Image: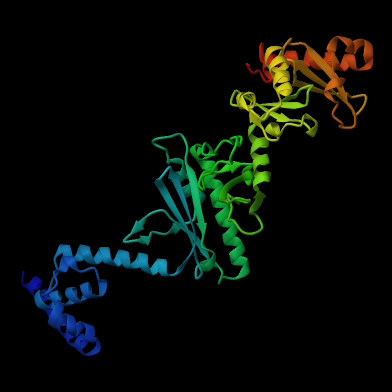
Length: 419
């Protein structure tokens, strides 16, 4: 007990001398001692420097500090280390994952110039990012656990901090840009709900619909074909990459007419061309019509038009409506694509189409990649007599297809629709 009192007295004496020196060297300490020490409760102090003043004054007064003060000092020291680390990191970009209006995750990427190391952060303390070493396994773990609650899809938003990165050297800038783009692709590939977030193409019937500036559309195959509409004006539609930093080189500028044509190509499946110059397409079990050439002479079919809307239109020629109703609807007199058989003897291709009304198969030859006209198709029964050298290839191909496909699969090769 006597030794304990001796140690406490020594502590008190040491800090009294230390505080006396601090009064001359540190004007803030002297001011805090006279005005702040008793006025401000210790548990309300969030300034590490002032809390250290409290610790020194307490030790000079009683020779010890309580547990609450020690814990608060440890907390502020830890927070101060976070702030110090954040001051040395250049922000590179931000990536967030959303479900509708709900933000499920925000990921920050940063670069430490002194350490020449990249960091990532997904949490904050007192509005300061908590930085971790950039690691693919950690990134994958955070992204895989994200699940939507009210839908089956998520989507990404991202922003690259170009101004913060611009003052770095060229090699580092290129490296960070590559890192940011790779991170976007990785996040997208790690969560299937993000892959469900691709908006299906909808054929533009009438006025071009307004498109969301968050959900992506796929205009080409692969990750490079994912775009988000940035602006949609009267004359121009601007598309920016969904999984890459957007700049002037990789933006897509399309006229409204080009964009309309793009939506048509991506959304409507072309089925056939009729004898009277009208193309037949399908989207979501609904039939669309479009003039195959200018000979049809109908403004009503310049773009893909719903079959029902065409029949109700007052601008469509009555003769054309009659042909559509009589041949397309009643007789189902059109051919749909069935198969293409390469002929080993030549560079030609044997094209097979099925007559939708009767279910009979018709053939024609494609020579030098030139597609035959509709009138050139003949019943398959005449293939053996007309082209005996190709009949064996046809039988061989069909037998091989039948043996590889399960029962009923052959019927699925052609698109089946109901009118």
